[in-house]
Length: 186
Image (cartoon, rainbow, N blue to C red):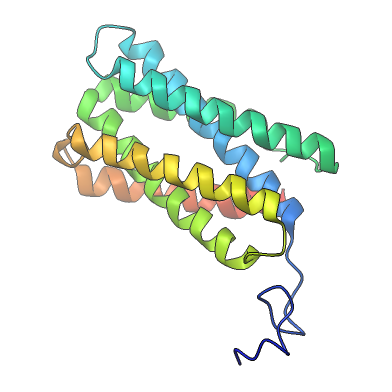
């Protein structure tokens, strides 16, 4: 099975082709949603919360991720998801609602979202392997590391102490998984 003679770029002959267009589409949608979540949190918290600086920094990183996927979409002719207006409203609303619940709930939102994004990016990296699309794989690896940092920051700042954390986290994670599934296709 691992015979290099039978593998092509880390994949076996007969494997389904990698759909990098779908990857770029869903990643762009996810980064857009993440930027909107942080925008919603900052709209509620303003500069009053000690977490505002951390959230602002994470928002800047998400914007860099989004800018990269926007560029890749343009260069490669990838159409965006048709659900961008939904991600705009839903992301902002989720960010604002969790911020209204308090800083720990806002961090619980971040931890939940970043848990799913880390898993998602890991699956994409495994599917791409080392040779399929080195540029895309490199961006995903870079962004995955930053998403893991966001999760660690959120946990460090009390995400798991938010009221109703297990339920809140489970709901947000389920929503993320559903959004990933839908954005790949629509």
